[in-house]
Length: 165
Figure (cartoon, rainbow, N blue to C red):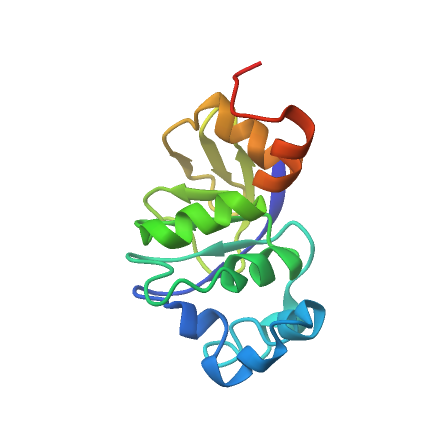
């Protein structure tokens, strides 16, 4: 069970919103780059976010260039999952690869600052602030295993392939 506070963003949050292009020179210093996550959209985000919190967005999250650093620095900032109405395919794949769950759901009943509980296995979201209950499609078992191992590389290191054990 994941639990944390919602940080709400709108539609069309691109990889440039997540990690501004002017900061890509920091790619070799990920902890420093993570200090700037969402800097142009919410300048105080990196200082306010706590371990376990959630990014909540509208449609088309993660569009733009294939910056594998974008989901990685979101995860490094402490975010436990991204909840969004829709997501760019390459962002979704990069997020799973680094162990960051991206959940497709109706985010209209989640407000900035709401306290959420997310059950990845059951596909359920409880908004503890307004008592709304939401659902998302259950993830395939192999995807849950990849997330539980912290991403694709740790999964492959441990299991050697994609066998469902």
